[in-house]
Length: 417
Image 1: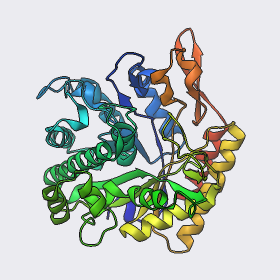
Image 2: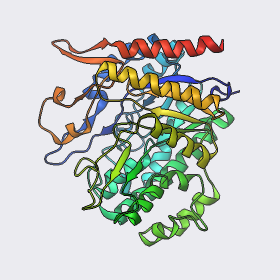
Image 3: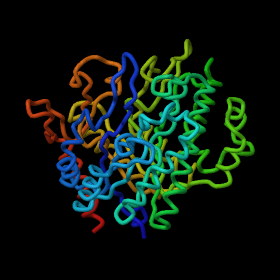
Image 4: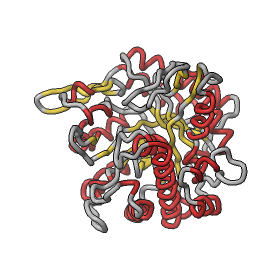
């Protein structure tokens, strides 16, 4: 029996792990481990997760650091982190790609060798840690990847439009599938795959002048996951659109013939950001460039996306990221409300197996990449621990959200035991 089949709700945390090392004029490298000083404090940081009763941690590997040149690997730092997970008894759910590629891969996701390079990296990690790590997320939030890199021109390789978006969707799906197949060959039945994507809901004037756009966007939310799970064929609503904008029929056929399925389907939901309010008038460009208005639908929205993913993919589901950027009291309120929803859904028979507060400690807003202000100007108050500037670097200061998380996580285990 694997962990997600034991009948419990498992509590975990994550460390924000976005890595976009490439730069051009007006941009800074974005490495959240560097910004939060996790490269220095990783040993104690993992201990903080154990302190609040986290059973698992969604944690990402900085691909660009451990694979500094083609065929070259530097495992020194990562070996210590993985040993620390084993020491603490925390299960790492390893994010292989949480944005960003090595700097030597020219063109990033648009490089023709990207899918194979991603698979080589996945297999190298799986082989090295085969005795201790079995849980993997091949690509975190692939549709955010695709939009930022392929539609909005915001991150490398800076493509735009539907053709750029389709090119990124194709590359990411191909690398995703190859990576999962490669890991499965290494680990066999011991492997567990947690697929994770951002959830986006559309409310408001959905039947107004943007109705066609909304229908397309609602399908594109699932585009990469539908591709890798072999659903995009026949009368799939995205099939003609993808082909028209450059998707290869050979790739579609291969993905449909050799699907990779989630053992757990993860949903990332932020009540302040995950629901787009559609309004008549000019359509916003999206991302940070021209953001669409949002609406906070609270646990109603979270329930909707959990049920939608459960029905669509037929796998156990987990909340793989959630929080609110707000005061500690508001964070505690969201934590309690969303965990209460999780218990209610489980009581109703929904196979909800995990709940993840993201992040363990505060993080820095992605707009840091295009700013010229000190990092503290980009701080997001989201964590169980506050990040506090000091002459000794960033301190981790426990706040009331950690107390509430520990109470809920340990009470759940005690009630089962």
